[in-house]
Length: 451
Image (cartoon, rainbow, N blue to C red; front, side, top):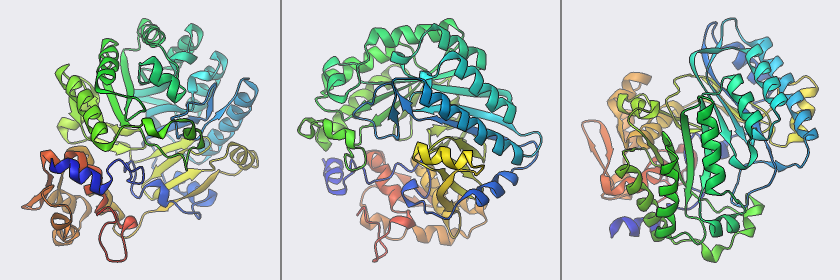
């Protein structure tokens, strides 16, 4: 099968191929985007603007071996409380620079484990966020829920704070696989968490599941998917496990000889995808699925779906501000990432300084390349005529960016009347095709290193 041959040759499952939740990817962020620059970018947000907001809580009661996120373990509440005090200071510094009338359209708490917060901490943090900027009418407030780290009082606190969407990480329900990846989480515990959410009126549910884990088989994948579907999620993210022990040392605990081959990974993905589609979910982009009534699928159908650090989103805000250690913000002028280390983040904030450590100021053809990449990953097609109109760029320049693509990746795309379309059989190669347009990942010869 030609697609499998290409998968092997191009290394689709190589973790070095970006997911393109930003352009350029965060691996290309550089020092030089600091407190002064970010302060100016915040001050430039117009009066009455609608923004998105992200709060990062980098603490976990236990550290899952498969996870490559920047987190730290804690068995007590003291370091969490000290961290939240610092976040509140950062929020106040942002508030001082925001123009009047700014509201939050999308609010997300992630981590780490946000549900590790005690009820009083949840109320305190939400109050500090809303003192900075209130939620807009109809806003979405989502929180990542760890079913092992949630109870009635914390659910009550989240509901009282205004949470109306929950995101639950499942990964895999097979007990043996859970043991191998350091993530024990029974179906019953997960079901109880979902029921607790629904009892409090939180009916919008997102769930994450992984393929490519050690010892996964199509039978085990099918069983986990069926259990997940029984929980009635509205939206599902089907992520491929990225084995990057050189970045996440805890992954050295995962046996590499038990990881599936590229062909087996594709079969696992197809098994899950077919079950989701058969259950009425629409396939969205490279790794998301949503019911027809979900806002993401509606945005997908309307052509307004976007891609950011949370993956696919219906969020239309031009500004995404992230607070907390390692969080990333996006402004019309560029990206900024806070100090990754919690201690250094806290030191800078408590010294009265916005904690941005690195980032990227947009320039050159960033917008055009980024827009083409976003379109390819959202819709498997990029209408260069639309991009030319949106960004006031000559169509000929955009078509020229495609030069050599069909030769480098034969039988993967068509280019007709200014519309670049990924062929159905080549959709698993969407990230590879997108990478061809990445000017920050080009060899000296001018061709994508993915080739």
